[in-house]
Structures are given as C-alpha cells and as structure tokens.
Length: 629
Image (tube, rainbow, N blue to C red; front, side, top):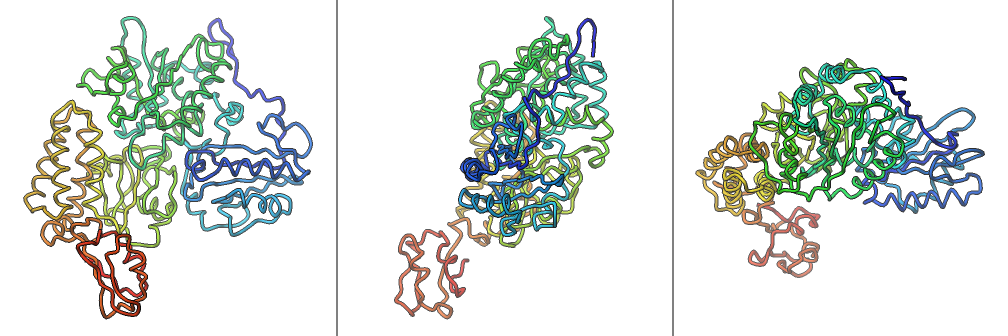
C-alpha cells in the first residue's frame, strides 16, 4: 500500500514455521493463575509431555515445524479465576479438533491428564470446566459473554508478538495509516458510541475530537493510557495489560494518529510487576518490527511510547493528578478548565483513555462502528468488562453487552452467592461507587441507570456481600480507603472524609446516635459539591447509598446497639444456650483465648470479659447451641 511518497508494509508474523501442533496446551499465567501455582503446572506439562516419547515439546511455538508436537503456552487471565490454574488442551486427530478446559489443576494432576486425556483420549470429568462435546455446570459463566476487549486475553501468548499478529494484530493500525484520515478515525469512534471505560463514561470520539482540534504552539501533543487501576476488587485493566499488551499499544497509536500526537505514555502502578514486564517486552519487539517509533510501517506517522511506573497513589487515577505525576511532581489534581485536551501534559494538548477503552479501539476499526454500536443498551453501546469478587461463587472477569442486569451478571455468570447464603448488596464502581440492594438487581447495567441509583459503573468492579457482612462496616471500609488515599489538597475531601470516618467508627463501636446519621448525610453533600476533583466528589457514595438502601441497619446500630451480621464486635455477644449444649467441647477447643469453660458432657459457659467476638465457637458448634446477638 502506498501513501504519499512512502510504501506501507502490512504487518505479518515472522515465525520460522506455522505448523499447527497436534497438542496445544494453554495455561493461565495471569496474576491470579500464577498465585494459584500455574507456573509449576506449566513446568509439569513440559516435563511430562517430554517423557512420553510421543510428542516433541515446543516452546516457544515457532519450533513447531514437523512431526508430532505439543505446544505448551502461557496466556493471560482466562476469566474464571475461581478455578485457577486453568488449563485448556486442544488436540487435533484425523482432521478433528477437540478442546477441553480443566480447572484448579496442580502439578500432581498433570501426570494423569497426560496419561488419560492426551495419550488415552479420555476426558477426566471430575476436573472438567468446559468442553466442546457436552454441557458443563460452568457453561453459564461463558454463555452471556461477548469478548471484544478481552478477545485475545487468555488466548494468545502475551510475550509472543507473532501470536498477536496471527490474531489480526496491528491490522487496524495498518488500515488507519493506509486508508483513513485522522478525521475519519475520529468520526468512526464517535459513530461506535464507545464511552470511556475508566469510570465517567465520557464519549471517546468526542474526547478525541476535542484534542484533535486543539492547537499546540510547537505542534506537540500527547496521548496517555491510564493504567492506574486502584479500586479494591478491580483487576480488569491489569488482566488486559498482562494478557494483551499489543492491543493497548495499537489502540494508543490509532488514537495518537487521530489527534495528531507524536508521543505517548502508559501510566501503570508499580504494584503490577507482571503487567509492566510484559509491556516492556511488547514495546521492545514492537519497536524492532517497526510497529512503534519512527515512520510506523513505513508511513509518515511516528509515535513514541514511554512506560511510566506510578507509586500506587489512588488519586493518580484522576487524569490531572496523573499528568502531574508524569511531569515529576506530586500527584495533585488541578482545577478544570483548562481541560487536558486544551492544556494537559507540559501544557500541551493531551488525550487520556483507560486500558479497556483503548484495547477495544482496534476491534472497532476492523469490524466497523455499526458492529460495536449494535451491542449494548440505549446510550451505553458495546460491551463492558466486570471484575466479579467477594462472596460470589465464580469470581473472575466477565465481558458482557451493556444493559445486562445485575442479576444476570451476579447470579447467571457469577453463579450466585457462595454457600448459597442470602445476598445483601453489591458494591458497584469501587470506593467511588455505592452499595446496591437485592431490590435493584434487575436494573440494566448502563451508565445512566446505575448513576440514578447513587452508585456508578466506574471501572467495572463488582464486590458481592452477603448476610455475614455488615453494611455499616462495609461503608466504613470503603471510606477508610478513600480517606487514606486523599491527596489532601482540598479541605472538603481531606477533612470531610476524616470526620465521616470518625462517625462511622463511632457507630461501629456502639456509641452512635441518630444525629450522627443526619451528620453523615449533611457532610456527604458538602464533600460532593466542594471537592476539587471527581475522586473527592464521589468519596461519600458508599456511605450515601448504604444510608439510602440500608437505613434500618444503621438504626439497629445506633438505637438497638445491635449488628445483625456480628461484624461490629462492640455490638455483638456470643452465648451458649444451656438446653442445647451437649458438652462436646468443640467450642472450647476452637476458642483462641480460652474464654469458654466446662466439663465434658456438661453445659459450657463463655466468659464475656475474655471473649474477643471472633465467632469460632459459633462456626464449630454442631448443635446450634451458640447464639450470636
């Protein structure tokens, strides 16, 4: 393809050989998988297959040139984190292909998987998560998903650029550079309806248009990827950075071309060491292949990316604080206007998008704006990645069309509450979000609907809490996080969140009053309107939604001095019911402080002065003789 006076080179894999292996073993090497032991599992497969004498083990994959071979590949997060380490095995025999996924695999299990499944052709049902031959109990986790941002995550080897190129990697960038003007790129993203996936949901195309139209005195503009994912329970961006780093680079380059930027930054918190390592590997090889840097693919377009490690300050997820950090200053937010599109990094026009937003941009360019806009709900187009965490059976990553209900996500994909306990609430949107009750589970998950509840979609965190969680303590936890992470620049956030936290701790300690509840409402309102940045303005959300939907639980704490979940120790008492106690001594043995006394086959007694309210006695008693009140 020729553009101007230059001839563009279409990117393609450079493997020595593209022969498909007879056995393809793909193992989750995302953070969750590695923590569960997947590196040891990978090593066990390499050694075990090597000992069979049937398959030549190949790693890296370009060695698969002839004969019977088995490729053992590490991938990013495969989604169903509750079953890590996950191992997917694809076998090809006589023109037929069979794919099977096993869960919670250990090195000890590998020998049997090789013997029975790979050599013997027998599926081991008790370890099975998914197969293309018949349904399994985990099919519901995958049924409603539509993976666009996660299309390569858990599929390709994130450290092998040829894997990405074989999956149409960098073809969207080639299309843009060879056949589209910057204005056409902006209009395509506008038409798709893509909104920022980092929290606010601002239209991405509109944002790009502002930056494209901005003037710079020296012609320099910047494009930043916000990878500073700091919400408790959120790991969407981390998984994309670990599992598909080239998609983020490609999305950035397309955006940079659209706005006229020549330099970019990927801002990632240092607590993501695996993501950072894979980003650096990907950047090095992308530069070597001419896919980043000067005259990309032989075109007139040059784009240079630097990776910036953040120190872990939550406030640096706010874009003006992030730019201050990149410049070498303290991560303080600043007043807006001017907005970054007009005056951002080093006072130059700057565009900032988060990881998930950028990872889906190449898909939109290749498949068209209409294909993306056809998914979703009303003003919230496309798909969204959610991190399911907390008291849900199937924790993990799920990408679904916007508009799916909370119930479908939590009870359909997530499988419901662990141990079939009673659902109490879901914390949506992290510490800037809110607690939503069971009565709202049938609401569609889209930006406008969730905002009306007092919560936010945010970056996509969903933390499920059950009957054993105290809503007051939950609100206290999230406020303690935002209070400790406050940058301290503006008094409403710095002082207001501290006062609110003191009141919540007072209530949890059994010293609260009804006037304290009124104070919380009043102070929350002042913080929302008076804070300098959006993080301060949304800090009271967990408390406000908890008060709105669970006011009776707050009243129990301040009027009845009772915590129904038994979490607030000052409001909880454990006692043994004499008529139910058999004197089995199970509770006595479980008590860590010796607060329980009693002879065998006689009624036991709890010394309330010594009791630390840990609940071990309640958990161990088999005769319902321990009562919590």
